[in-house]
Length: 191
Image (tube, rainbow, N blue to C red; front, side, top):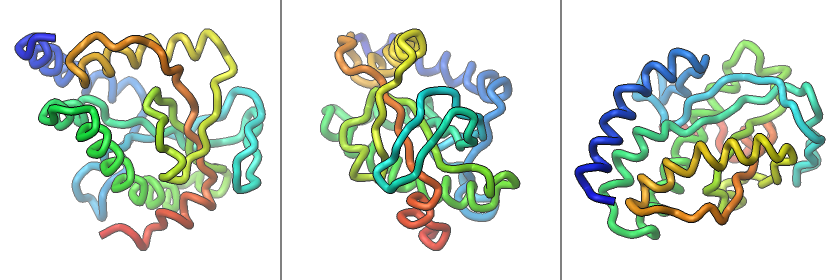
């Protein structure tokens, strides 16, 4: 994709992002006490889907409460466009997610519904290596939802790589129990 077209699309996306944020009921997982906003935006939700058995023994069932995690994609995109290789972009993304998870843990620990939330969940096509961060990857059972997520993530992937990307990797759920999140990324890890 031509550089000017990519920059224009990202600029438009940055203008529309506050509207999406206002309508989505998301909130930022804050870094520290009122500090810089984390790369994650979150909201509690009731899980709707097939039962998930996590590697640490936790079971997520239909109607269990989870904290949905969303990457702040447009903010990430502005940084990812600076890198000239998939390897560098992947490393940067991995480090940003790793650095943001303690803030998700802090947010969940202090959330008014923390006692009933069983873990965190996200959806991504970038699921390679997520196990190293503590996530279990789970196939999305609902074919319509899987297709919808694939279609909505494709433009992001195309922009980040500055070329048309084939839809070969289906999106997956990334899930982690609250106990594992606190164990790996507890609030004591926030600098």
